[in-house]
View 1 (cartoon, rainbow, N blue to C red):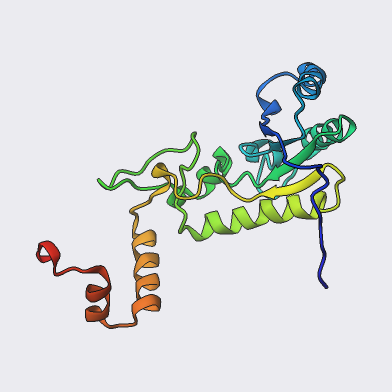
View 2 (view 1 turned 90 degrees about the horizontal axis):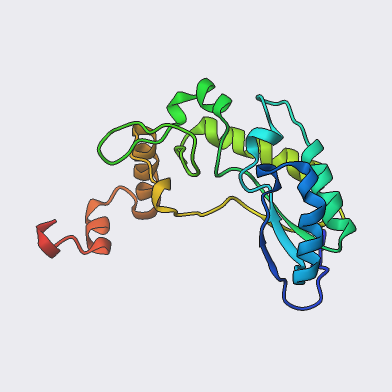
Length: 196
């Protein structure tokens, strides 16, 4: 089955990120009025809200997002609904400390900022698929949702991880791309330069 979804915006979308989880709910009505006054037609929401949407593993609380999307829809503002996968919650890292990223000097970093996870971690990938799936299931047909914002800041400088899991994943990727032919890899990478 193929589902076609057309963006319901006349012309170019105008807006930005909207993170109302960072301030009291009683401000949201004023936010809507100011966005309407500014001519905003679409905002990205939910980018960094994983801990609020899934306060513990497999337990969801969509009440805040329900209110935000309803307000946006009532005010004629479309939503670019984000998967909040750039910021796993603290409970995730307590359960999966092996998913913390390792910097190039071998130091394990802590959570509490965006992109502080190992992208090769099987536990992270499972959790990310779970929250993305829950959002898709709940909001696939929501009238405010015009687009899906999938992850955030792919390739961000602080998203690199040098742990053993990432190294093994990189080697698997290299073998898939170049086979077991080290000469093919060296040729493709031009490693004769600087005697690499």
